[in-house]
Figure 1 (tube, rainbow, N blue to C red):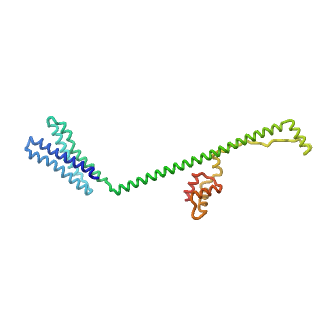
Figure 2 (figure 1 turned 135 degrees about the horizontal axis):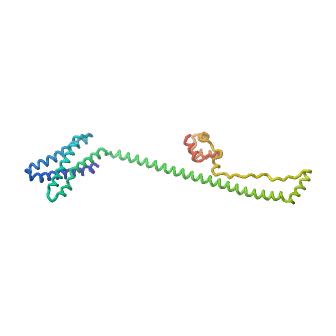
Figure 3 (figure 1 turned 135 degrees about the vertical axis):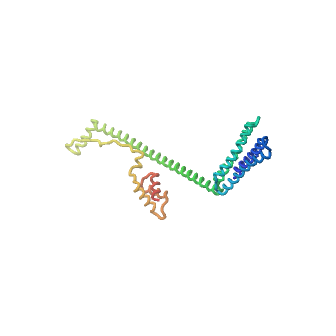
Length: 286
């Protein structure tokens, strides 16, 4: 894995050193003997290479020296300065030399990137452990989302059933009220009829003499429709009472009952509670 960063850094360093040496020999060779110019170029490259080697040694030991780093960057800036100066003094090819003047600085930057790579590199076992932790977290999040969706669907189904039951009760009450209203209307008509009153008077006089018959209809009061949610809220248990009841049903047998068995016996006994409250009570006592 280190080859991904060290090979580009080595290649860029070699190219910049060869280019610096060639420029120094070509540029200074016209003003001094070429062996002297060669020594100057090798001095720049040698100083750069020596500081780079020392930096790598310190990095292998887990250490760092700001002074050595500053010296290494100084040699890189000197090499870049030589290339820029040669570009401005060259005739007809200044742009080409300026285009490659950044290579020494680029080489130092690549070595910096390689050093950061080494300081943050992890072993294969650590990477596998990290991937396992991330996968476990994703699995737990997916299970939690599925559980929430299932509970939401169950609650929606329960509310729909309660609402439909309330609507059926209200419909039956409305039909009963209408039927009773028609029956009371018929009785009222019969009570107020002249022939009917005489017949009732003649019958009552034989049974109870000297008593004027009073045939009054029973009072039929208004009815109130039953709300859908009133079916469940009526006689609702408190949380403490619900917890105690759930705990008693759960430990009614040995071993303790599961949630499904407890819920079945809870509802068979005639108790009423929503699925959400019943499951919450189960979690609190279990």
